[in-house]
Length: 288
Image (cartoon, rainbow, N blue to C red):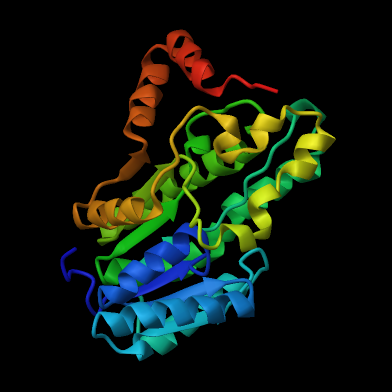
């Protein structure tokens, strides 16, 4: 990876765990000034330790890594987080949004408040912080990067509520693109399939079985509790995907879809809806 990120000031929402943390570590060892944002103070501290180690190993100062605790589902937290970033880093050149919440359900039996919860978790958490950071990123001719999901492109069995949230995020991102790109900002929407977890930490993550209660409550096949709702798709390597995201930033791509065959399938469904959905059903048919 080139040094194009050296001294680049970056705010990563959701940068304390999962794919957001992978991005934060790579950017830290690439010389960027990174602020990671997470809901848990303990999670922020643990992420800082890992990012500082990456920066130090690459010959950069540990002081280039900062952290902030904020809950973006609460009004005012996005504004506060951006204000802290501007104060501590002296500005914000790029923003990465890596926040979201998946679920499993039967949409016709789902309470309306649960659908609102999906919109709150996957869309509304992005709104205030994006509005707050956009001016700084546009002035820097930087990047606004949003980690969506294939669920924003395909509606598959038991994943409808998650698809509602992520497709809403995708529409929001397109609206942001229309307003920021004429002002110099670059907007990238990333739509990945399920990402492989770090096997070293997997046993300690309480989220491994996070869908068990939902699967049981909705009387769904056990398979839909698996990553991707049990779809027949290979798990993505987080490190490789992160490098692809950063490469897409440097190339000013508007969208990154992984795996690649999903992008082809999305186009097929757009042009040949019935045929495309038949192919999609082959990958997502449920098994007990």
